[in-house]
Length: 370
Image (cartoon, rainbow, N blue to C red; front, side):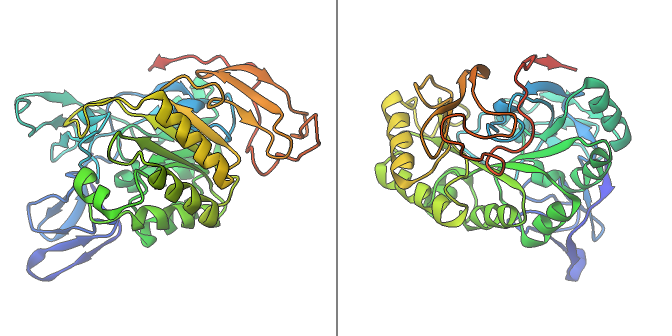
């Protein structure tokens, strides 16, 4: 849906400057920003994807987001639109992130070579209807996910306000490329959790692989959210020969400990070639194991490994005595050993500020497209 945007300035000659993401595009009349979802109509900025969903939603395990220390075992009602503030060569969801909305937001289309004639129909979902569907589904959380949610700013603000009234927790699965103004509004509306993808610790990586200037806005967003009481987990997709050295892993792990705290859950994920394939190699087990060990040596207490089987990488251990608190195989629990008051049964360590929300000890783990 087309709707007047927030957070923009009028410039001379009917140009506008958008402040929703850190690209802060200056947009000429009749043109769109880098995300391709925000357009200048005669000197006024509009979002083209307000309430425009790729489907009516899906039900996922919250661990798929991935969030392991936030309402473990919960079902997440997942929604997505199209577009992205990045142009990652390795994008795993390029079929939606690189799609463009029509001016009325009812359809999507591609300008990618070889896909010029491909179109998609988008589902219009006003905020009130979305809330009804989430409540009816029985899900306790809603995740804005799959494409980049930060460019969906207006819709997230409006739906989060309504979801909070129904005690539905809201989650951003995001590249973190926000501005202070946009982050402030997300904090004020009450976003509950975020998984932020820190792709690398170098500006060179972000320029070459993601098509943006710097990693710094991502790091700033993570710090702002964490310091304002939002639960933050970090994901790092490890791409062979690009961000997989011990130095890369150590720099990221040290930054997390020093800026977000050693209890920040950190996920290392295996890469597989997709889209424009910046590397033809899959991430080997040995590299994921190295990442786990480097993070552990650095002092991170909650380390997880995704997209590949790892002996310890799915489990939650007690930071004090290393007792296995939650065992996982994929997204399923193999063991839960924690008291009703969230204390370690072995050493009495208190998890109340480390593991947020109730632990659903008998999750249904249903995958369902709605």
